Length: 180
View 1 (cartoon, helix red, strand yellow):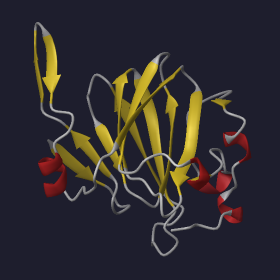
View 2 (cartoon, helix red, strand yellow; view 1 turned 180 degrees about the horizontal axis):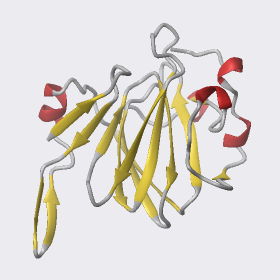
View 3 (cartoon, helix red, strand yellow; view 1 turned 120 degrees about the vertical axis):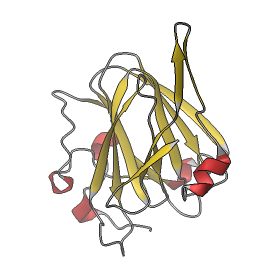
View 4 (spheres, one colour; view 1 turned 90 degrees about the vertical axis):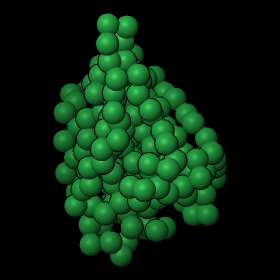
């Protein structure tokens, strides 16, 4: 596996070694030892999957303490523009974001540490998005930021996004009191 680190500390893009031939492809999608060696720590306890069509935006979501989650995300089918926003209030990169295109043909993954809001938009119909999480989902701990808050400066590259009613009423960064 190769690991790409960003200016926003903690976020890591992962490129597995892919073995391909006429039959298809094989890759190791998770290795606790390799992740730990790369500085990615966590006890992974839950896997989730969503399916989205082109133009669907999900997020920006997180779970509040004591139910925080780190996530390891990837696309099993299709492509998605993945976005993470630093919401650690004492971080020098607070409010800044990283964007990575996750592509089922490149097999890349993104590690999203605790203290980040996470979201994505599907770039193709029938995009299958996989989440590996370090804590169980706790509905009472849900939190989020408004996906299209101008203060975040995220270019989702989407016209007429399909967004859930719940995600349309999340707070802006200016009206947000970070629990991190």
